[in-house]
Length: 300
Image (cartoon, rainbow, N blue to C red; front, side, top):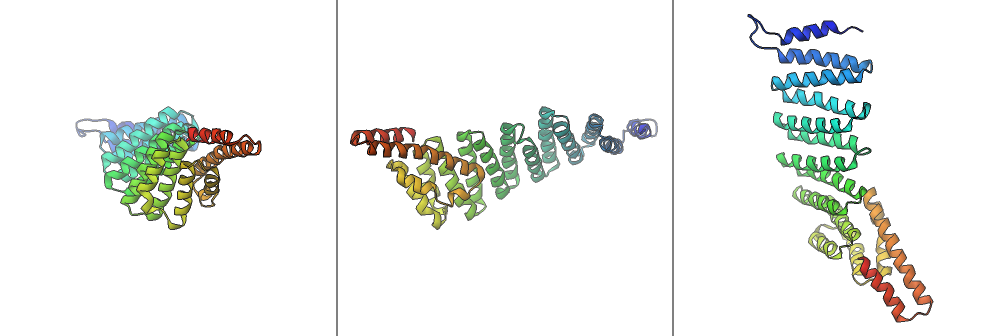
């Protein structure tokens, strides 16, 4: 298939002369996009990327930032998914988002980062989490707190998956703040429960109790008893209370990454419970049971 006629037209669009004082960047960009589409159709991905990049450069020259961003998003997806060049894809997603903001559409900029993060989740979850976090910040340019909460929640779940619980706690707290601002009471209840569980998984009971007490007003009435039973059990090293709370159905109905934290806590406290029961059955006396309780306290 011969596309040289299209390219010669593009060259003419960029040329200047006595009767044409400035290049026709929009016309050239349009021709480059046609070439990019044609090459993609015949699976010549490298050439499709090249001509999308040329189109983006032309659009930037004419300050058509929205169109330039669309071209760079196409480059990002092809570079990553088709060629495995994820570093280039990341750069293109970030540049495209910046150009959407330059055009004055920060909500589209945030969605661009969201699309990029979703594509990156299987190959670079750390960067995916970072893009979700940035998307949350960009959403707040227009005070879209509900959208910001959604992206912050996605970032938090990615950090949970990566076992980076410090960052997970930070993002879930950000999510909660945005949900409060958007008056999403149901979302606030889940976020408070999630934040409490993340802190418990971090082994920081003080932070968990503070998070719960500060957000208690938002927690659904049906869930208050379970959360207070859980915190009371952890505080008093009462594994029966802890296990009873952790096995409550509502904790197992949360997002996948949160339920994984719950399962990890169940395993941890089940081991402590088994040691306590073995100590009691062995007739070791109070000292042996006390040792098990001290070990449980050390794990908090």
